[in-house]
Length: 393
Image 1 (tube, rainbow, N blue to C red):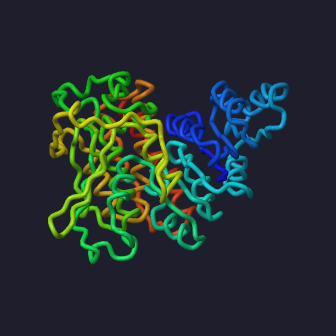
Image 2: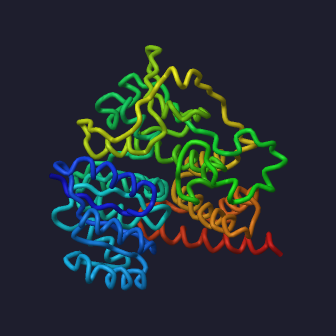
Image 3: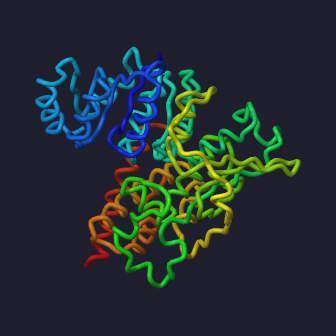
């Protein structure tokens, strides 16, 4: 039986992971659950899944949870802060770590899981975006396992030949086709984008996701970050990856081979499929997902992305090509800009403007250490906030 820590248990990935685990009590047990401030949901999860540890990043939330559990499940140890997160990924009895904390906040505990030699189920794309080489080196040096949980990267992983981490081109792989839904604004007239609201941006047509990643889908920054992530996961350059808009979200990604073959992974848009694959790999288990009915779908569409509509896709490619801490700077600027948009402080079309300004004005460095990465992350956030204040002036 495998012990599992879920970083970000109250988010959509965490909730779906617990759903899959609950279907297989003979295979998995929940060692630890973590959240930021959502005490009510984490309390409910603790009572149902009975972890050994519960972690709230927010200390006040941790105190509240501890009081709630005292008379209901006193055997659960409540921890708080980054130290609590690190403890529950490093401790004995944890075999797998589901890394599902959104944004840069997930970097340190995810990196700690790699250092501890765990199987890292990576749903936090920012860990690789911010610290690609450092993170991948840590996986190798500590004999950890890295399995991608993003539906697209999981699909690519399933379609790749054995040994792809050694020399992908000599194994006959010609191209990676990374699919994208196009988000809620795929067909919205470009001149109307500046007036789009957070509520409209978060209304994804296919996937149920958190607000930040929903906005990233609307700008297609999520796909830009996934291009960067795929470069590190599959040891390729950005020009090896082609983004394809596929509105139905049935084909999750494809791999093209030199002999003309194109392998694709299909399934209903349900995150429990890649989660179950990551948990059970190399085996497969039931995920509770509705079967795919090709006759019901009937039609699959594919469209090239328009970078005038989605400039964030271009910015992400440029950051990856620049190397060093450019991707960390991009990610930091995006997190600030998206948050300010969600707070209705800037317009939707200001998001990419803020990111481009930050990339042009914050100097990137070689990403040789975590300290350097975190320092440039902070500089980018500070510059992004100054840029936003200038926009509002």
